[in-house]
Length: 207
Length: 207
Length: 207
Image 1 (tube, rainbow over the protein chains, first blue to last red):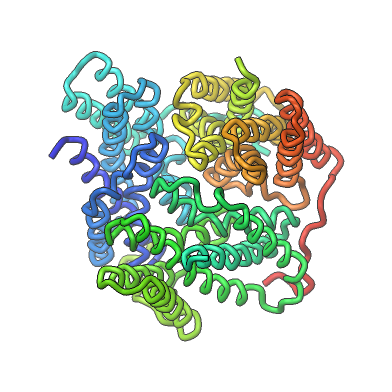
Image 2 (spheres, helix red, strand yellow):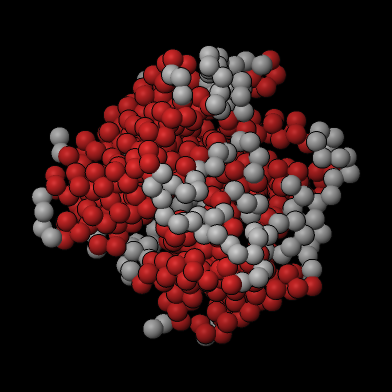
């Protein structure tokens, strides 16, 4: 099995866990868990594939993806009550999902021989938009947009690292590992140590 | 006219009525009614066609669809004030729309010879996502996600019924009727008698 | 450079400014500005291209678009505090963006020899949906749906004007200018003088 496929599987699994955790906070039933889990898991990659005109869309050619997403959601349905701080689990799982989905997007774009800016953008789309859909549909403030945290920035830095290493001729395994590591390090540093970029502060008060 | 096309027409008509009812609750003008009506009416099927790479998208090849959606929305603009309980109308119309859109999605996927899991998912996408977009855009809690009601579950059971009957070699008319009947029976039973699946209840309080 | 490409550039630029203004109201960091700016800038046109099966999507074939959007967002990040009434700027910039994006959508559909209803709809999609995504993602009431203002209606009237003039055999420059002028005049008249269509008023109170 090739590394990109493994990345896609891992990203689907972890994002489905986060989707199901959000569903647990919204008190949905088991099918609702599976629905939000699957939406989160395949949302970003679906947009990536639609924009790249890459058919069949990754999860359509292989039912394993949906099976993984649904199983992960069902697992959370029966076990989430054992977890003390579901919101912390959500944040940290989401950081791993991001760190796997960004290289998955980068790798898909590289395999289609896309130019560098598109490679970076596809990494960001795959990493950020599944979680964004999860939060918009459930009606929570998107994690992607929480004030004073690195999220899109982490995805951007990771995707850029991957694209640069590819341009320099590195091996896929190195490209994808570095891309994921940079993404995760920045996101995790932001969660653990409060790393952030300056946020916009209006001088006149917000109207 | 083939049954799938009739299903698409019916689903567009009924979903447009629900979209316009939601627009009436948000007090939009007549063009706003048409906009939300059309978005609800063709949203799910558009996602289905884009994901299946099925071009032209169903409503692009035949202007009748948009004409139906806009006419339905205009009708509601001028008559909704005659209705006493718009929210009840919305719920019940939406149940019929779901019961027509799920078989429409199933039938489109079967005609493209998709494998069974994709047939089920396309039924769910076509049935659930137009209404989801309607509610997210207007800013209401999506009907799809209301606590303690069958919605995605009804779509899933109906789509699965259709996919199984197709696998067993039944005629299209039987497949689509059974698919719609199961979907509607579960959704209507949920609305009328409170049928539901157990919802997730956290033991520690929701944080 | 052809007029349609110029229109696309202008629409990306102005919509990115509005996206960044919305980001300033949500106090995001500089990457958040770029993210919302780019989403707003290319969102409507991306949906248009995906629905028309027009690949590569306009911004994928030419990195200038994303560069313009990101530069515009960065500019706003450093200058928005100089502006006294950011909400008024947002409204007026958005009106210009709408008036450029509607003809951009009309022109893309005409170049693909689409029938008249699709030309009108693609103008509306390109004009309205980027701003709609911006507002839904940020969690504001969409400008598109504000009560008692012309927005979708202005886009509809402009797109219809363009489609009719095309049918009558006019030159592209005239078609696109008239389309943009009608769109802008109606939107601006609505902002400045309160032009509006009657909104739906329920006789029984809203439940």
